[in-house]
Length: 222
Image 1 (tube, rainbow, N blue to C red):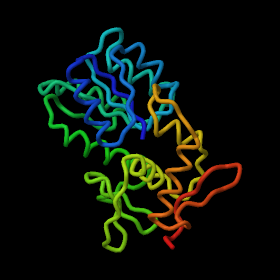
Image 2 (spheres, rainbow, N blue to C red):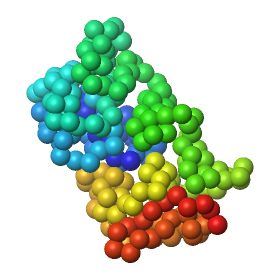
Image 3 (cartoon, rainbow, N blue to C red):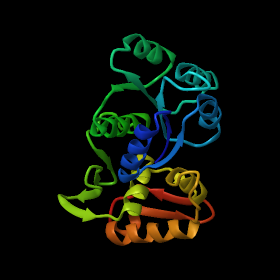
């Protein structure tokens, strides 16, 4: 999943970037509201973390521009602890959730997971489930019939995206856009290798190849 972090506090941004990357997210970071207003509409993000006190353009105005442009990406806003008015204005402007500073990183990760599940129609699931699999995002492994299957970091990122989009045909280029940040070189051959590794662990029928189209996840495990 590819996230946009918009935060002008550099030490905090560095901490969040490192933590989010450990959680298996591809993250782009911006510190200026004007850049965020443009990039949020031009890149295929799965979720945006938005601070409200930004240089260039305030976060609330950035959010208003995104929603006016019909950008439906989930947005989690960061606010000061006592800024209840900002929280209310942010929710009115179209934010999906908010988190008050200072916060524990684990709370941020759990809120992100919940927002992503909700935005993909899995709101009633405490964990991500599809095709007989249960994804443990904290330990980055998958459970099937009570048995734990270990995943590499790359396999975990790919499987999480597949499980959020069951039964959908996903091209290699689409997957690359959502699994890598804007600075990482994207290689479709590497994606194919990770798909084959997942098939060996989960069963070949779980991920179907559609020639000329891409992959479809969601068949019953073999």
